[in-house]
Length: 232
Image (cartoon, rainbow, N blue to C red; front, side, top):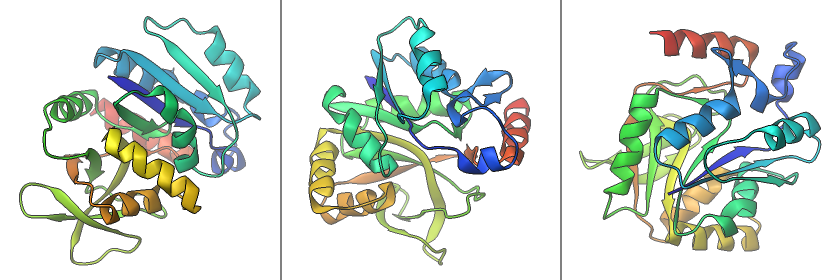
């Protein structure tokens, strides 16, 4: 399976808080975020890894070009208006299915391994979306599920009685979801969350896969939270 990393954001909040490294190179437990993801992907059987960074991230570009990973690693350099558009730039290289992650997403390796294995054996759903009941994002996307099967029937920007989970920034998707992504770009849809809504509108089946906790490293304090979480 192909894996992909969206690392095209500027990380402006980290910079404002005194973190000098670009977000993909911010270290958690001494390992840059992007290296941590690539290593996890390789251990989960990646046939290739694709990443996108923006044009201003020269330090990140140089770093990744100097790395030698044991599987094919493909770097795309392009500034995009959203993570959805970053995904679109990577789409032509991803084959029939992909596991996609934003670079600032921190989770436990054992949970991730079970998540990928569940996707490999998933026959009904077009996408397996990582979710968590841990809410620490400034603008989370709430995920509505039905019954015990975990099928997703809606997304919302605000909490309500029908949402136990929020999106975790990990997406395992099959080819039908790529077709909807092309439509989303043609229609001028913006933001990954609106693309996810369009997936449901077009009749695709999405299933939630719960993680105990997923942390987005958006602030300097999140680095400490992520390290404490992984050390438990």
